[in-house]
Image (tube, rainbow, N blue to C red; front, side, top):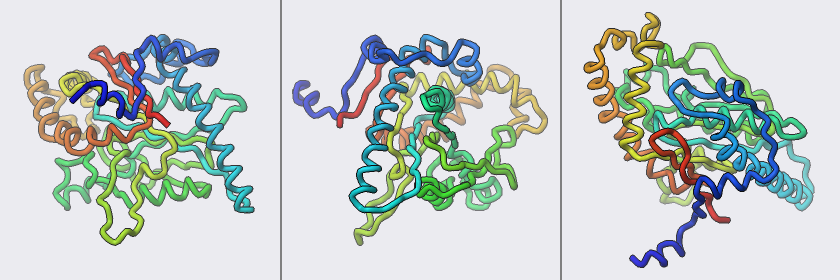
Length: 317
């Protein structure tokens, strides 16, 4: 195919790191190095420069998008002659296991919360909407944990519908990475935030088109903006293995950990185990369910092997 034709139909504007960093303009830096360090997952690389070059320009862009959406909401209410409840602006953060979604979501939450006049910014991960292990085991899905079928989709859709409708409070279940299961009778409450960030593997998934033309909601229907964290598969695999080795000496060493049995593995055994889990579960999920959703994102952050964002792709309006 003629590359000029291919570029002509590219729905994204692609920016180099340097060009994207210039779009920060006069957006003030509201976090210091110590605060950035607390937002970073133990296995990610994030420093003040990464926040300045990548996330501050994104924060500036989001401030414009949120303001424009609020103006459109007011205009629609005036047109319809109604008084609706406040509707939160919802941002989805998607990507593979080990790509750094949690770090990105926390950084965005911290930056957005510093806007004037101090909006409330809530963060929810879709891990809480996984079926409990007992249900997954009964249905033979433990080896597919994180695949779309392992989530209680009706509960997640009901949660987002209630949030988007301005209901309050709305509760989301809590997931423990230590026990690898839902925490019984524990919830996080979302109370009419100005902005809600929803982070998860499959949040940009679509559903099958209905033959009868009836509406079939999907999670991304509720998003106003979405970010996909991207990296090449060999890089993701290496990050996953490195994270596994690190956890073997930290979280896995806790007797309460679901993965405590891995704490005694040698380096060679741990690497082999991590690669096996990656191939059997995480790679399959990436190829079949996660990567195909990348073109649906509003913004794609492409990372290099050192976890630094190298290019930014913004969907054209």
